[in-house]
Image 1 (cartoon, rainbow, N blue to C red):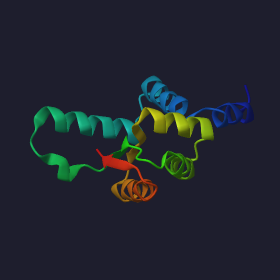
Image 2 (cartoon, rainbow, N blue to C red):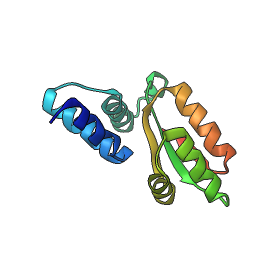
Image 3 (cartoon, rainbow, N blue to C red):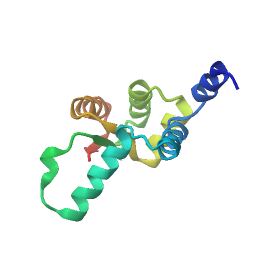
Image 4 (cartoon, rainbow, N blue to C red):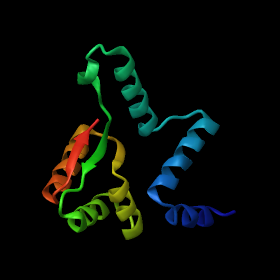
Length: 124
């Protein structure tokens, strides 16, 4: 398989499939990217309860509620994440994490845009 074929295959993946691929590559080659660091930070905060949330450097953007402007929220998710219409609609319908492992600044910007569209959002 050539580099171009690999890139084409990656371009056709959904965000969820791409996230799973990154995790598998990290496990296989013993490297780490931002998302696993965020997961480790969240796990440490839940178990210890030491109040070390100030040290958190990676944030997940969770869609808690769509509100009455679902179409606007779907459009905002598409614009922010680059998802296709089907993936964005599915993400909005399912709720939960829209984007993971983000910097605080980027997560706050995403939260603002989603709230402007009518959604209720939480950073974790």
